[in-house]
Length: 141
Image 1: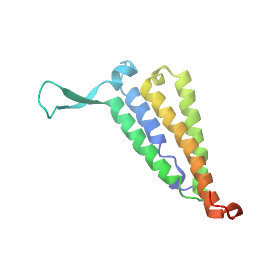
Image 2: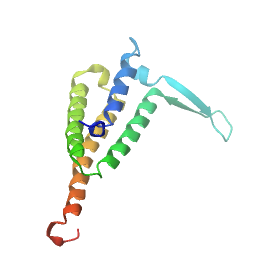
Image 3: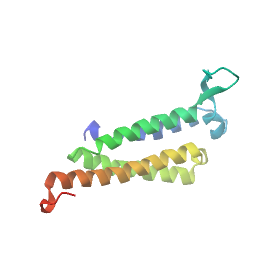
Image 4: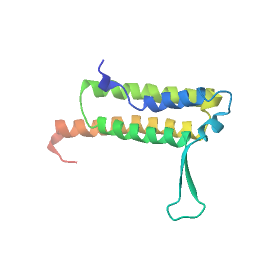
């Protein structure tokens, strides 16, 4: 098994669990709302933009999803294993969302949706790339 076949979005799943579990006895929503840093508005005034743990987890999730979509454009045996493992990650997210109280948050729900998009996009893009590479029927679709 190649490291390339590992779905990167699993890191967002792991990152969420680490942040929430290391949050101590605080409620998951409270941990996710803990501020990492804040920036004052450049226009002046009292407006402040705060960046919290939930935002960071979603940022990491979006970056991993982007990388997974790029990986889906390559056809190899590693990509088939990657698609299968992506499905396993989605199923793990779904089970955790349904059964674990700490995962019953909007942030985790969006991670789960990103894993679903990874699965669907991976298979869809993989089929399109394979069809183009093989050239079924000589037709250009």
